[in-house]
Amino acid sequence: MSRDAASGCDTKETCEAGTSTIVASNITVPVLLHGRQDMDVPFGHGQWLAAHIPGVEAWLLDNDGHMTLADRIGDVHAWLSERL
Image 1 (tube, helix red, strand yellow):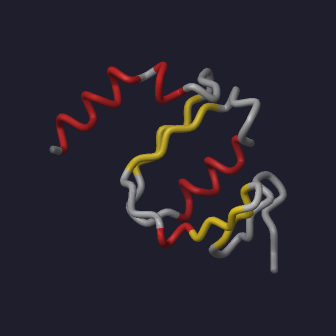
Image 2 (cartoon, rainbow, N blue to C red):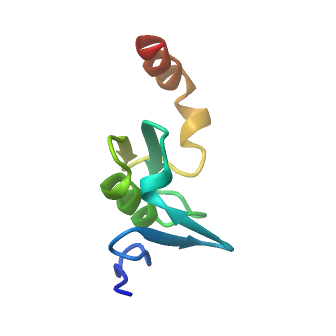
């Protein structure tokens, strides 16, 4: 299995996250938020997911951290309102 050095993920389809294995093609959530300043989850994981989740709209944000969703809740609600 080939691993991407930045994310530690299989470059084809799977990523190890703690005790879980993520299969990107099984993810159906249309948006991904991830901050480069996240000290809990490597930014490379977000980049890998953005590249491997079919049809994803990725928000990979340079100045956000682990609480991106909470910090940008207004943006998230606006995004949802446009699609529901």
